[in-house]
Image (cartoon, rainbow, N blue to C red; front, top):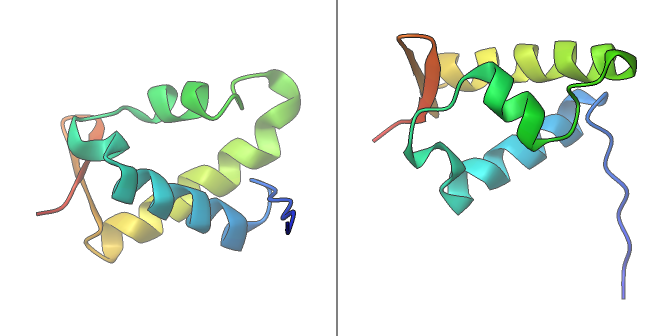
Length: 78
């Protein structure tokens, strides 16, 4: 058994998690950034760094056309 520790404060780890969420269907229905943050349990004040990294990586996924941003929510690209 191999144990891997991921940190959402690390952009590469955050990307890995978000791409997994895309593949798993989380973004098949529109999700606001607040919904994503809550789903990942980083909605506390002490998780500000993780939220900033998450926002940056989500923006990268939009630019790469893996996600679409429309009307304040993110959705998986077709």
